[in-house]
Length: 251
Length: 184
Image 1: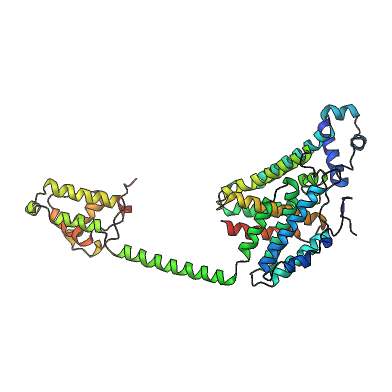
Image 2: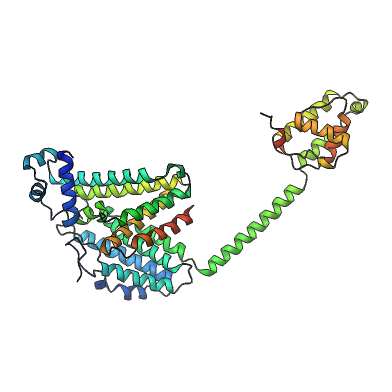
């Protein structure tokens, strides 16, 4: 019999009388099932003692022997698994189990046991299930990467149609003075780029006249009415592709 | 220290060293060196004295914790790590005698008793406090993490009290950190 350092109201090995070890072993073959069985046994036992001892007797706390017994049972089951960091997982389940006994006594609810069971379930997921999950995640990631790559590398339909619209505009622009429809279409393209719906540029590969028209357009929003043809050609090549960061007003 | 604080301090020492039931009003009066009338003036019943003791312990704990938690880390995982370290420190202090509200609920197991009810309220308060920090730190399910940490810390506090110096607090901290990392 052992007493704690300060309190006189300590019993010893309450749990030993329960024949807990045998009950846990009988509850199943897998460690997870057995630990869930332990949780069930303890919650039932605690609920019973809570309801039977509330008359005038004091509810007794666990003793160090009880803690050792729980630790041995939990540790033995965790050792049988291939879980990483078995000591940490054993401790976690041990402290959660002991805490749940206390909280159940405080609030007379088995809510804490649900969390203990959740933890047991999540720590002891079968390896096969873990592998399937990992494989699934890898496949999903691969598919996502492929889809993103396809979307990034192919020009957007809207962008193409915008440029096509510019190309089909009246040829008055070629005479040197742009017509309102061309200006309006170019402004529309500009606003789309500003909204960030465009992709990356090939602007560096443009001939100098087109590049200059393009950069003025991008950087300053200028549509030079005398240089619309070069701008149209530039946009026809780069498909409205330029990041919107350059369009932020300078402070 | 005023008279009320003196009574509370004496009562706390007695409750924590002998237990609540074992510390009668007469012993508290004798130990604090005050008149019976003075005690009843401040605490009209022993239950009110116990409630005041529990409240005072909780307030001091949160005050200590808040003063040490770095507000700069409020929105990150680091604040939860810091919290675990502080709880470990707190459990390891020589003055630690277990969670007062847990001790009270053990001594007053009847769920209809006011002390038992108040203990349950304080346990919920701790859970709420931990959930709030978990939410600030960006936990996916802060309420569940708060509950898990409360259960774990309560378990660790009991083991450390039963067997001081075996490293339960440190092991509990490591277990809590694993829980936290899985929840962010």
